[in-house]
Image 1 (tube, rainbow, N blue to C red):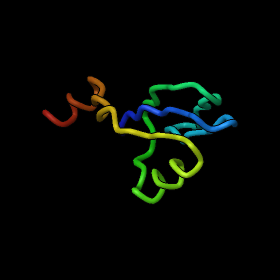
Image 2 (image 1 turned 135 degrees about the vertical axis):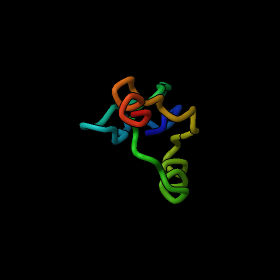
Image 3 (image 1 turned 90 degrees about the horizontal axis):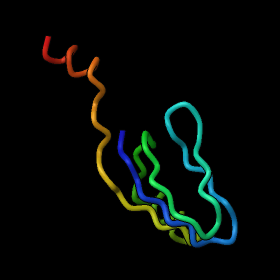
Image 4 (image 1 turned 90 degrees about the vertical axis):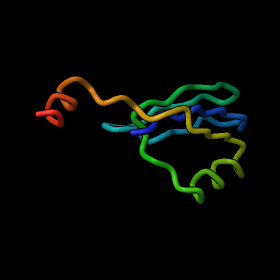
Length: 72
């Protein structure tokens, strides 16, 4: 799951969906949101129209149990 940098320039807090719930980014603040669902271009454009800038910060690293399962 990817990690996004979210800059909320809107006058209201915004909820970003993450694995297991959501994360709130307060108005006028920035946050790094991990384990977020992948956003489509349309979703990013929608947030941009509301004053929220979303940029991809990177892919989350698999935890050690996942890498052991893949390697055998």
